[in-house]
Image (cartoon, rainbow, N blue to C red; front, side, top):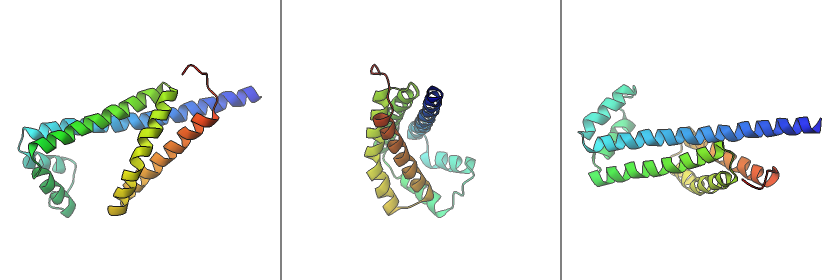
Length: 163
């Protein structure tokens, strides 16, 4: 009976770690798409392209926040736009590393995810403090839950030494 419960616990633990991996991989995919989009903006009329994307997404281009975002984006010099694209790819690489390592259930990936995710929590809190939104609060809560779960898993679940 205990062995059956242990197998069930391992199975649900694997499912949960894979869910975290999928979350990290989805974030990586979003950042790759963002980076590609940013690099496409460098060699086009940024204002026209952004207006097109806003309409395609069903947003109001005349809305206060959307028009302010377009105005800020179009005032960026090309080298800053390029830097944003590079940063997007850098974060995507981090999330890909986390996601793949977690999917493979590697101990180093658990530690890596704890370190990276924890290091971003102060930035998320700062952002919430200055511009709170429900999405930012939900992401912060999710990231804290991921760190807590991984720390629990690292310190309380026994695993073979060769991982």
